Length: 282
Image (cartoon, rainbow, N blue to C red; front, side, top):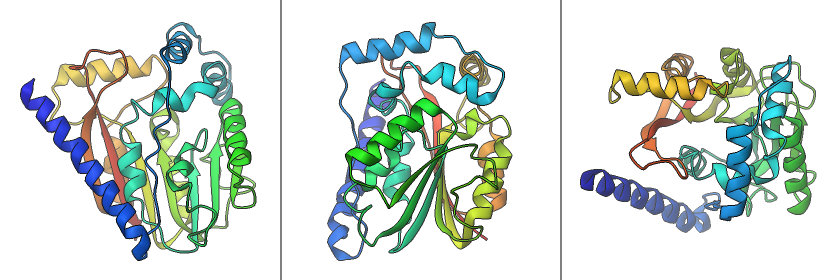
């Protein structure tokens, strides 16, 4: 336990060091980033937990099922989820951005990823940002975020299927500098199609950035894999080693971090693997 605590402190210090370096470089030709950590209260957490534990997933379509799960917790989504979606911060802190960037965030939910670039999004660092999600309640929160931050005209929120190459509002094929997918691949039944759509959108040399829960054959016992796969599957979230392997076969890998993360109000020793992957279109 002592070793685990030291390792976790070291990892936290490493992320903080990366963040401070990024901020320092902002004045020297590097986009400025913000460590987005929304505040929450115990009462808010209880509302989210009640929706997660006692809410039912229903509906015939994938969109209906997602909406039935999120509609009662969408307004509190970010406050709770940022403490369990550990791959998002290292992904956003290392996402390649150059001036005039065209960025598409597939399965972007409430557009919280844009908050990491809140001080830069309206500058010449970004030409346009497009956030796509299939869940109406999350999209409503995303649109309010754009309005509250005066991001209109630069950040475009799209309600639709991230796997659809003909989705209205997406940039043309081969025109995007970055496509990100955070904690969405495991929730998309035809997940290979969203990776194909990302590949289609990217220009040659463009970057794909993906983070999600996973299972790890190198560090995880079989019983642990079975436990996490089953537990997540009850919420229609499907963990697989194939996600990273497919990314590695489709793109030139430039960065891969695999680590373990905790969950709010869950015993510390129950940790699930997550990954943050950055690759480049071949």
